[in-house]
Amino acid sequence: MEKRVIIMNFDVESKAYEAFSKAKRLHLSKAFKGEQMAVVHHSNDGEHKFEIEDFLDFTGSNKSSAGGLIGMLVGILGGPIGILLGWFTGGMIGATQDAKEVRQATGVFEFLIDKIGEGDTALLLIAEEEDNRPLNQLIMMELGGEITRLDYEEVEADVKKTQEIAKSSQEANEDDSKEE
Image (spheres, rainbow, N blue to C red):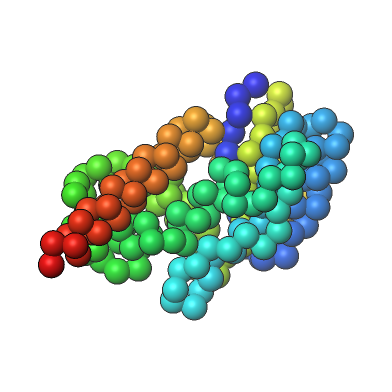
């Protein structure tokens, strides 16, 4: 069983909440081994905010949404790195030391923005599955949604790379402002 980041999106916001509730039951029946799950909303107010609307840590370690990979993903999507990625203000990517490096690290984030469009609400799940059919049945057949599975280690590597780029860019900006 490989750990995956599973993105589930729907045509109606309420279905993400319904999927959250029903996926909890699937986890209890051992259909998958969940780590974290969150309902994530992408605002449509022009500010491109990503917010965690509901969150569950299956591990019992009481991690907050901010402490896990889902929280880091959402934080990057809605934080200052979003500007570096050019989602809201084209051309800002040139402000970094290496625009090519930023573009290489943004794959998962561009994918998420494509999957969770403005005004959309989706369900993100970090889990291991022996069999993907129970979750596919729930999301695609019962709720009419779409499901995408990403390799956890690849997503984690993209998050770390993006955090490093954001940190080095911030340090470079601080150095530049000290010189002025």
